[in-house]
Image (cartoon, rainbow, N blue to C red; front, side, top):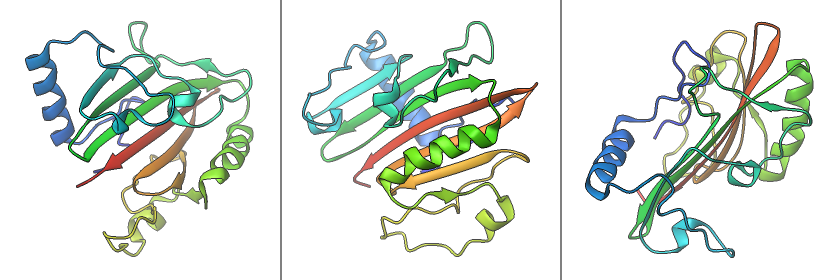
Length: 194
């Protein structure tokens, strides 16, 4: 499953087609309002609670597992856009969970990157996947390994992409500058099963 793909407008995620098809199918069959199955056990992940589904336009620092940069504001690409999203589908020992926060700051991208390098370090080695030639030229990792790599990243010119965690629990920060403002996304992806 590819993690973070953006089109020309910063922050527009392109989830894998299989995820989109499954999510649309569930939403049409279940016809649940957003957040209807959004119940989290205080002791663990939603995925520990049997079968479930999340589709919510609300996410916070706890959902992405990273602190908010001091003074950061929510970022919307358009006035009707949502600055956050949570999606998830799980059952029978497999599933996925995705949380995204889009933020902005007047601080320089280097300051934001320094803050998130430190925050990501609690999840292990912090990878800098910003150099697309290095990311695409990286040796393919063993698929059975849980070690995180940059092989699936294709950052735009001038975009900084930092990652930490494992293939099962991945934390990503994407940072870029647009119109003198530093825009950044905090992304968390949890995968279970195949």
